[in-house]
Image (tube, rainbow, N blue to C red; front, side, top):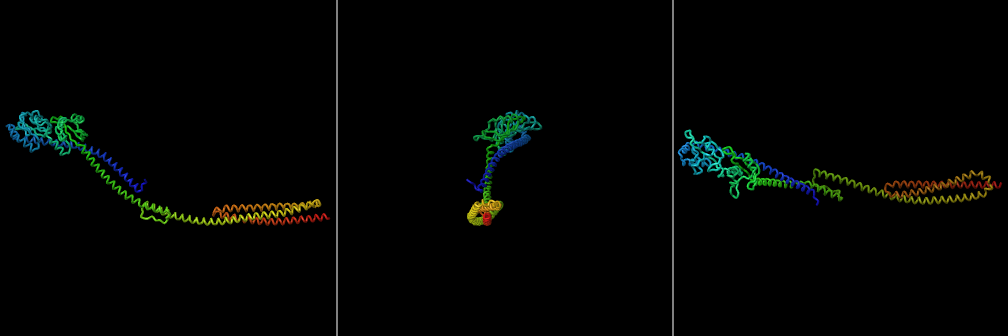
Length: 525
């Protein structure tokens, strides 16, 4: 199947568009995937810093709330008076108004007087580091394990009355039994969040079968080594419950400065894949739209290019069929205009060549007629030459026969008388030699006449052969005719000479007669 010029242009454009679309798609897919991975990992790393900042902020808030409660005079008075009811009210009001999750108030011995988050009291919290520091007159904040709240961010401050430490106040945020902190992180940062106490999940936003996966352990040894053992940050793709996540793990330090657990934030790669697909689909849609535009523009451009070419082709077809008056219609520009002008100049030149060829054909016809006429003239000349040759040779032969007969007769007569006139013969020897020379000259003349006649006939034959060559042979034919005329003239001259020789023979015969007469006279004498 042969494609038209327009089809070839469209096919080329289509191939180019498809190739560019594929190259763009593959390039976008590769760099988009790589870029999104890096961007997502960088985002996770940045959000990990944001979580640390939130923890720091929360630590500051908890520390501030604890300080406010510890410095209230009514708290000190209630501790000294063992007024649990008053302290519970103060603790619950603080939890409600100051956004903290638990409040624990202990006396100077470390025994709990009241809790805002529990009715439990009378137990000792003196083993907690924040309580120890508070009873020693030092405020502190950090991650710590408690009695009622297993794992929390808590702060402890001493309670003074009259310059004497009468107890301590501990407040904080529950990081284990409450998921408020991780839910806030997910809400603010848009990532999953998990708090590990050691290697165990104590709070998380990740769910399986509708339940949070609390109490499950981290099973990736690389994470455990990098974070819990080396105290570093782990940034990589990690599989969690069968799903790939871009993750960040980093250590959480307790109030004693040791690693107590770790924090995790991550983003499901399914969302990244969805983003990739969305962007790739958008890129493909844009590429397809561009491809359609390019094809449409290419189609009309190709038509604009091929339409003048088709008109030029139609013009060329008309010329090839013999229509030399055809005209290339329409408007042209650029290379097509140059092509049209070239074809028109070619047609003009072709018409001139054809006219010249027709003129030469007519001239050749006229020359052929002239050649035919010359050939006929040559035939006539040859015939005349044949006739002349035959007549000339016959006449010469007849004359020669007469002469020879005369000579024979004279010789016979002379021989009969030679004995009688032997002495006179010597006197006449010289004259006889002249007679012999005259006879030889006559014979030579006869042969020359025959040769000239043969040459005339041969020239006539050559003239007949060359006359058929055309116009160029006409001149040669004319020259041959001239040569025939010349030979004819020579023949005429030769015949004249033959006549003269005949007369000479007559004179010889007269001499012979004279000799005979003299011989007779001598005989008579």
